[in-house]
Image (cartoon, rainbow, N blue to C red; front, side):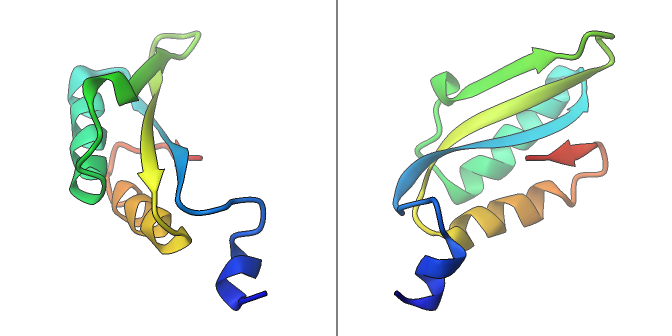
Length: 91
């Protein structure tokens, strides 16, 4: 087993993977997260993006389904998402 296979335990790449981020409940936040993900996964379509408001309505989670090619591919996406000031957390 290679080192990369050990690190990616539980995942067999390539695979579909839901990239998630939580931030303010605004359309701008959805657009910002979607555009970042599209830079790394151009195949993302409107049908790949879903959002859900928090119970208070102050926040929303944005999920973008991507076709992940490798662990590094996902790491690069999340690194850029985490640089967005409005992001509260990622999953």
